[in-house]
Image (cartoon, rainbow, N blue to C red; front, side):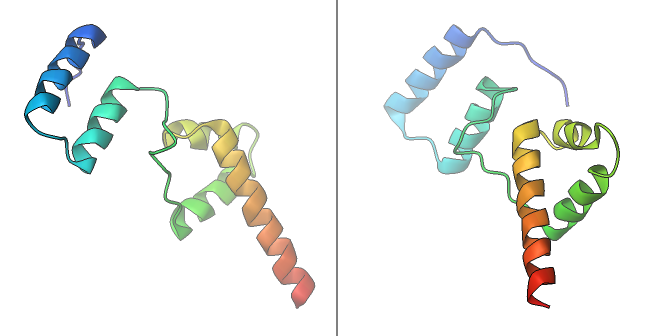
Length: 99
């Protein structure tokens, strides 16, 4: 995929013109937000954790700097990855205590 550099003011004025004729659908809004806010994740763009991502995160946590590399590879903030790691470890400890 090619990268296209667009002046933010121009992009916003074009989007304003589109908005005058019709409302953007939710997926269109998410796409535009992802383009405009590249590098900055909005609260509306949630990470949906899967069992595979959880396993990969736990594996990455075994190496020094692995969580930060995992976060960068999956377009997450390091804090989001650390928060999920905390929840996974806490759930594992709770299961062990119940057994």
